[in-house]
Image (cartoon, rainbow, N blue to C red; front, side):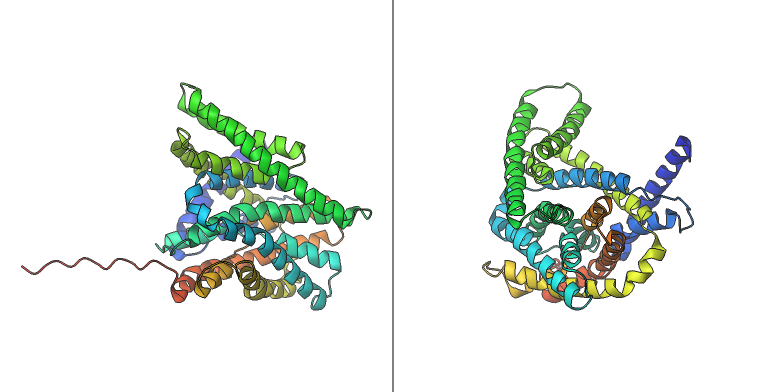
Length: 403
C-alpha cells in the first residue's frame, strides 16, 4: 500500500478500536480482546486482507508500547498506596512468576510431551499478567475492590513484566548458546535487575530535579521532555546491561510520589499515550497472527489455559502470599484475575527472531492462551469479585423523609 493508504487504514483501525472499547465497556468484555479481534479481521485472512508477517516490526512496536505503558502505570501509582503491599507485590512478581512457569512446564512435559526447554519457555512467556484489563472491566461495572487489592494488583502488573521478560530472554540465550551455565543466567538476572533499579532511581532523581527547576514556557514541551525521558531511560539502561522496563517503571513511580510539578497534567497525557500504544500494540499483534494457524493448537491451548487459570496461577498466588496477612477470599480473587495480556504475545516473538525450534507453534499457542484467558477471566472478574465478597458495598439509595 502507498503512504496515504496506510494513513487512511491506520486512522480507520484506531477509530474502530475506540468504538469497540465503548462497546466492550458496556458488555463487560476487556477491550484488548476486541483490539486483537480487529487486528485479526484486518489481517490477511480477514476481510481487510492486509498481509503482515514482519515479526521484527511487531516486536519493536510491542516493546516500545510496553515501555510507555509501564511508565504511565508508574506515573499513576502513588508510593504511599503501594508501600503497605510492597513485599506482597514483589513476591507475586518474582516467586509467583517462577512457580507459574514451573507448573506449566511440568504439565507440558507430562501431558503435552513437550521438550524440557519448550515447556519451560512456554511457562515463562505466559507468566506475566495484565491488571489493566481487569481494572477496565471492574470500572465498567462500577465495582470497587476492598482494602489493598487494587494497589497490589497494580504493583504486580508493573513489576512482573521485567521478571517475565528477563526469564524469557535468559532462557532463549540458554537454548541458543549451549555453553551457557545456570550461574551465567543468575549473574545476568542480578545484573539486569540491579542496573535497572539503580538507573531508574538515578535518572528519576535527575529528571525530578529538572522538572522542578526549568521553565520551558510552553506546556507542550514538558510532555516532549517526558517522552524523551522514557526513551532515554530505556535505551541507556539497556545499553548498560540493565532492565530498561524496570527502570522506566521506577522513573514513573518516583515522579508520581515526589510532588514533581505538573505531574498531574503529565499523568493525563501519558495515560492517553498509553492508550494509543496499547491499541497499536494489540492491532499489530492481531495482524501478525494467522487465524487458520490457531486451529491446530486449540486442543493444547485449551488445556494450557485451564492449567494456568485453575492451577498454576492460584497455587502460585497462595504460595507467594502465604506469609501475608490477607483473607483467603482476597488471595483467591488475586489468583483468578491473573489475566494474560499483551506481554506474553510480545515475548512469544523473541523465539521467532532467535530461530528457536518450534517457535511458530509456540507463538500461536501463546496467542490462543492469551485470547481465551482474557475472555474467560476478564468477563467473569466482576462476578467473582462479588461472589468472594471483596468489593466495596454500594451505598444505599437515599430515602426522602416523610413530610
